Length: 143
Image (cartoon, rainbow, N blue to C red; front, top):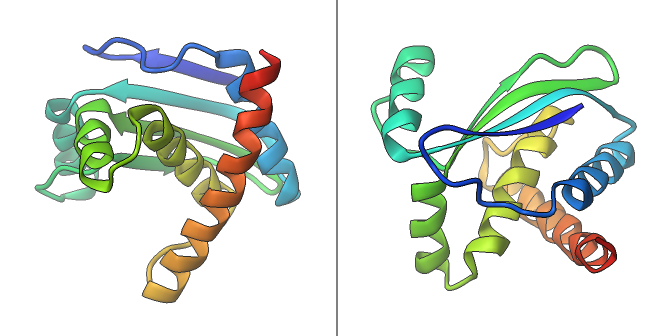
C-alpha cells in the first residue's frame, strides 16, 4: 500500500492512483513489489528536524528515506521537503511537478537497492530517474 501524507504543507500531488501505478511498475522492473510505502510531504523545518534526530545531520535536504524493506518487498517512509523541492526546481529550471516526481522515484529507487554514493552511481541513478520519468507521463495521461 502506498500512502500520501502531508504534514504542515498542501499535498503537492493530485493523481495518486496514477502515481501509485507508476511506482509499482518501476519497482517491478527491479523485481520488487510494494509493501507499505509512505510519502510524507513536509516543510524544511520538519526535514531538518528528522535529519538531526535520526541521521545527526544539520542541513536541509529534499528527501530522507527510511528503508524497512524485506527480501523482494519494498517498504519505507520517505520524507520529502516540499520547500527544498521547490527551490531545486527553480535552480534546475524544471517544473515543480517534474522535480517532485523525480524525488519520489529517487526514494523508490533507493528502496529497490539503487545507490548514489559515488559520482558514477549518481549518474546511473539520474539515468534511471529519467527513464522512470518518461514512463510517468503515460500514467498521467491515463488518469
